[in-house]
Image (cartoon, rainbow, N blue to C red; front, side, top):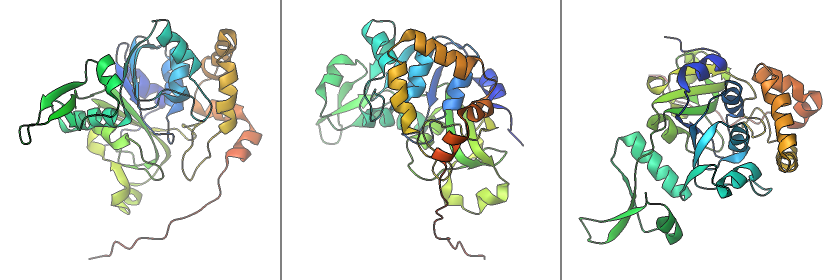
Length: 300
């Protein structure tokens, strides 16, 4: 059964005010177009969870979408602070929970596995335990030593960008793989955005690359260039200039409002956004083909 729909339809059907939303992707495959559509549809009081909030959550916080942030590192990668998020955290406008990267992934793994909590060895960051009451210790019944525990994370919506998917939601990812699989299995509703929609035979031809299976997917959306200004391995490069420019834009609330109006509210969708970036940007971010060696699965 086909789950194909537009990104606008997917966000309208599955993202609601007050939801916990996880836009996955660790530096790579960040679904910016989905974040922009959430802004465009005016969602409010969201809890935004991500291991690294990146610019996508700086923009969503600036647009008034968020009441809370759950994260394990905050920053404009390679540049500096996320100015908008930091200002709202420091002023008390935004609720927050901070974890280590391993802590965030452990929470997702517990959520994906249906476990009541995740257990870890004692952390090298005791200040997290002091400041986050979700960090608790229990006695290991086998050794008697203390271990750190965290509750599961089960987002209402997980949004994952992939290189290709079929109409049912079976999805291939390659390149840097972050927490996409854990997010997909932990989330109540999964939205896939894809560079390409391919026949099921293409997915079946390389089953080990199928990180996300159809049985957990609610919606599949064809959204080429969804990840800009992050990157999609084999399709487009990271727009480092954008990250540098955002640092300047985010210094000025008026400039942020103007950017949101020009690049989100006044545009219809991700395709219009990509075309507005222009030919020079398209050429600058284009990548040359570099194929992996074929794999022989055999025919029996």
